[in-house]
Image 1: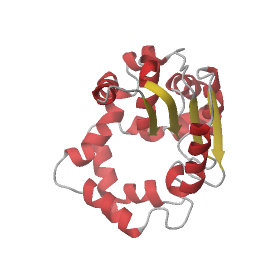
Image 2: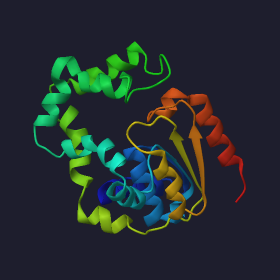
Image 3: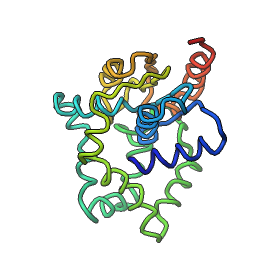
Length: 218
């Protein structure tokens, strides 16, 4: 995580300016961490489908339902096997994640056939890092002491908007509500009928929430 945060810090400082920082899922985790470490670089923070990391650590340990939802994060810690399972049956793991009944988008054509082909093309490249590289984000950052220590009890003070899909099958909406404890200037919005891929399911709703947030005065 520290390397990812430093990458984004360097990009922002290249422009000699602060920014509005937006991230989804793991990108949201990086955004949370950067806002904690370098608040002067972030005017506004927008996070989609990702709780404050300190909340995630606490919530998983006290809510069995979320622990079960997080099974794939623990499974991905194994070497080799997750890649084999993901590729099996013509990349059924990818289809389930993006278009499956449980985890996938809820809005028809949120992920079009062309979109899906593009994702599948990338992950099926012969380069082992096409799939192993993304999985290594989880392997490098789940359960490590630096991640736990860095996030536990650390507040985000910048104005923040957290957007969550009502039907998120990966992360309980309760974690979004609990994030208020570590982000006192946070606005929380739940998008009805949306999955974990909330910006694909309901782009107009997400954009409107973001526009309203950015127009507010703090």
